[in-house]
Image 1: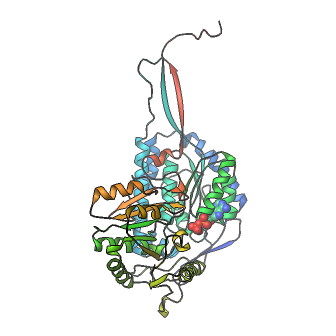
Image 2: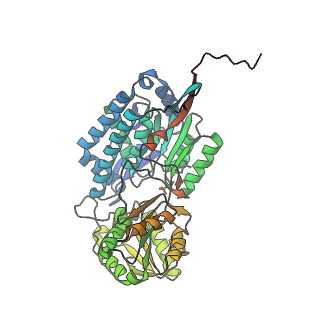
Image 3: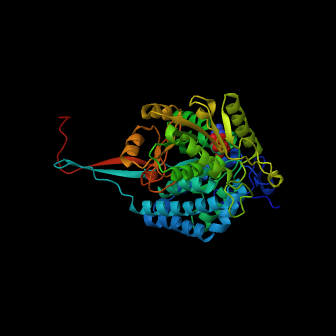
Length: 489
Ligand code: ADP
C-alpha cells in the first residue's frame, strides 16, 4: 500500500515524523499508512502560511472572490458525498447514515461561511454631530492552528477551516491521531477548488508533539481547539502566555430532563438518540437523565425496550444504529466506568458489557447501557464517559432538579421534554449550559452559535459570529473638520 502523503504548504509529501496508521475500527483492517509530520514540517507550514495570508494575491481579493473557493469546496463535497461518507466511516467507525449527515453538514458549513464572507461588513459607529467619523473594521488574525478530535472529523474540521479562511486567515489543521484521512481529503478538495498554496496545511501527528509545537509557534495567532477538557486547559495556558485568543469546544456531561407533562414516546426516542447515536462518542451526548418520578418507571421501561432494539454492527451496513467504539483502549475506559457504577451501587438495567455476537469480535463494540440507582454525585454522573452509557435519576421537585442538573463542572448542552412550552423556557433559562434543546436533542443549525460554559469551553463556533471569531476589530477615526488642535499653544 502506497504511503499516504500529508499536505504541507501546497505540496503532497511524506511527513518527516514517525510512522502512523489509520485503521477501520470495526475490524482493525488497515486504511492507510503514513508518516506523521514533525516539528520541521510544522515550522515550514506555519512560515508558508504566514506568507500566504499576507500575499496580495489572496489578501487583495474582494470577499466574493474568496467566497468562490468555499462555494466550490461545498459543491465538490456534495458531488462526492457518498465517497466521503464511506471514508469517514472507515476512519472512525460511525455508521454511514451518520457520516452522510456529517458530510452534508460540512458542505453546508462551507457554503454558509462563503455567504458570510460575502455579506460581512464593517460598522460606522459615528454618533450624530460628532467631529469625527469612525469606522469599525474587521481584519484577519493571521495563521490559525485548528486542532480537532476523532469523533466527527469532517464536520468539526470544516467548522474551523471554513470561517478561518473566509475571514482571510491561513490555517494549519492538526487532525486527531486516529482519524487523519478526512482532513487530508479536505485538503485535496480545497486544492481542487483553487485555494492558493500555503493557506491550508494538514499535519497529522501526535497532539503532544505536533499539536503542541503548532500551538506554541510564535506566528500562530489563534488556537481553535475541539477535544478533551484537560488538553483544552493546557492549550489555554499556552495561549495565555502568548496572549492570543483561543476557542475551546470541550467535554460535556449533559442533562436531559423529562417533566411530568412530557410526551413519553417523544422523550424516550429523543433521549435514546441523544445518548446512543455515535455510540455515545459525542461531547453533547445526553448522558445524565433526570425524570419526574411520576414518569420514571414507564420511561425507563420504554428506554430499555428501545435500547434493546438498537442494531450494533458493521457501520457500513444499512440499518445499523451503533458501530464500534474508536478503539479497544477506549472501550476499556467505558467498561471501567460501568464497573465503577456497579461498585458505587448502581443497577445496570440493560447492556453493561460488550456484545456476545462473535461477528462483532474484531471491533470495540459496547452495548447500549442504562444505569439507575445512583445519585448525581456518583463519579459516572460527574465524569465524561464518551460512550453509550446513560445514568438515570428520578426527581420530585423542580428546584432540586435545577440544582442537580447544574451540579457539574461541565456546561455544554441540556435537553428538556415537556408539553408546557413556557415552563420549559423558564427551566431552560436556569440551566447553566451553552445549548438547551426543548423536545428535540442533537439537532443543529449552522446559523446558531455553538459552544459551552464552565469547563465545557470558551467561545462560540458557527453563526455569523463564527467568522468574526477569526478576525480582529480595528477602529479608524477620520476628522470631519479642519480644526487644528491648539493644545501645544
Ligand atoms: P480526545 O479525548 O477527544 O482524544 P484530546 O484532547 O486528547 O481529546 O485530543 C483532541 C486533539 O487534541 C487531537 O488532535 C490531539 O492530537 C490533540 N492534542 C492532544 N494533546 C495535545 C497537546 N498537548 N497540544 C496540542 N494538541 C494536542
